[in-house]
Length: 115
Length: 112
Image (tube, rainbow over all chains, first blue to last red; front, side, top):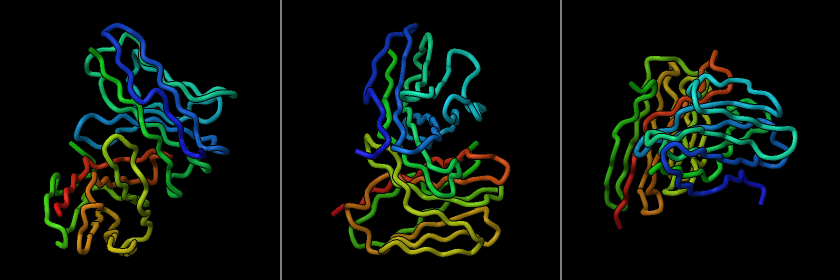
């Protein structure tokens, strides 16, 4: 399967717990993007990473959220001390060139529910 | 307030009808993309338009980029139930690096 793989597909956390969302880009892609989608809304940019570097985190809340894309392994979006407002679908996309003109490939998302 | 406004937000039509979805902004975009998203899945890229006034066709779907590169439309001819889904436009601004700015989406339902 050469697609963008996200896991888990569904994640339930209690308020105050940590959520870790994983994204494996398409083979050969070194550019990863995270977007958040609230119910019945479009996607909002969070962060753009290349291997071992955060390139643009302008859309990510300053507190409780962090992202990484290590040299080996998947990209991780970490949300600490989750609150109900963090409930959303989180999508990862990858690209070959880093230029969205050529299109992203999105994963199927992780649906986070905070109870 | 959305930077990209899509209209209508919801559309329910009968199989065989034609429809147009609009994506408008006061900002200029270097290019614009249309995606289709099905429930429980990620968005899938349909088309990228780059040049002002550009028209692209994908079977029964026609995409147009406005002359001023501020707006776009998606026209579907003879809609089918398989066209049901959430249609999202996304713009790329010249000075916004690699970020896509998405509209709020148009949820289309085509009834048989």
